Length: 67
Length: 283
Image 1: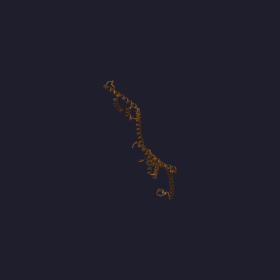
Image 2: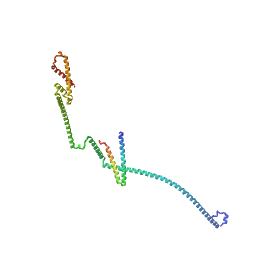
Image 3: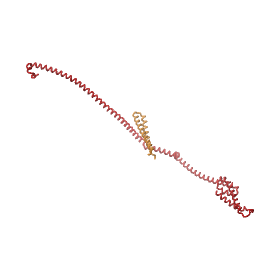
Image 4: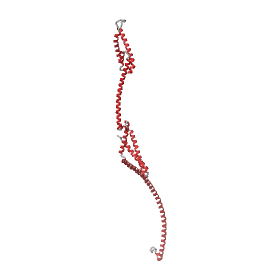
């Protein structure tokens, strides 16, 4: 693996960690909003969390080679 | 009081009654003395006891204070430790609980998404999308669009292609024919020009010029006709001159004798012409 590929993999990992952190933050906020009966915010945070999860899955699928 | 304790002289002097009286008096006095002594003793003891109690109280109070302060300190320290531990435990466990809860919810969402949108479907969708993109790029590269993919348009295109190929071959044939026609036209033209120009020339010159210029183009003929004729004439003259000199040198008759030029000239002329023609052919 050359340097360019290593940098690319590192950047991908950092991006994935950021996404995971954002996802955890959204879920925590969702639980907090549900606890305080703030359902509008809860909906927003849950949607963001699900969108991130779907994005991660799509990214995984896209990274697989076509042929 | 028994009489045995008293001396004999006193026994004789005192009667039983007096002895009894004395005894009673003594008893009373002793009783009083004892009572007073007891009272004094009580007072003394009570004062001493009070002092002792005070001292004991003071001592106990100081000791109790010390003990209380040390107990307080110890309890405070223990309580502080307990509070710290409780806080840390509370925070840690709260954080742990929070992370566990978040992870559980995340896992639940993952499971739900797996059921609702299977990974295989996402994979197929992304592959489909990638394939569409690749196909679009290929279409761009190969210049194939949706109109070309229709059957009717395809037939029309194929027909157009065959027509184009047919027309192309026809054009090639026509071009060949045109070339041939042009060539023949050029030949005719050059022959015509040559004929026109050589019409006024003497037969020998005409024959020579025709021989030399018959395969040339009309342009070449137009440009070089006069030059060729002039060249031929000059060569002819030179040849004649040389032959004439040779004849003069080789003659056996007198200079006055008539020279029959007409009979010998044609033969010389033909040989000279042939030589000239041969020389010109080289060019």
